[in-house]
Image 1 (spheres, rainbow, N blue to C red):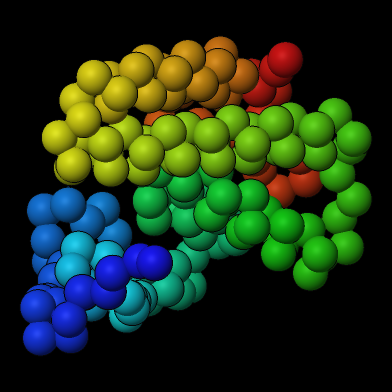
Image 2: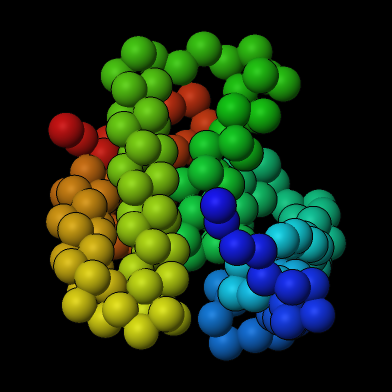
Length: 171
């Protein structure tokens, strides 16, 4: 029969993280409620960094505003410009070529991999697992090189444009 720890011996602890915490890459707050070294509950509050990009875009030509969306975030720049292009294409009833669609999807998947590798490596580094962190960064580097080969840059690839992809974006 398993012995239970008497309730009086269990230590309840709250571990707050955020809103500004060196281990957090994005604006969020996490509160972990721990009993006897076991997380019993987690409370996550998602925050927003308002940068005023919408205000900056007011009155800009569509192409210029579209280009600006890529600069919202360096980690997920392709996602922002892809969505901006799709919004304009749907609004203007523009059909993009299959080749452009394939390149956008490949860039999106590579960006997703690089983003997940970055967060995994950062998490490993945060919990003092530097060896695994470096191995993950090595894998991320391979993905970054593929992004640079296709898009021309390691960050903010500038691949998607309204109506397709830039001519330099090739497989």
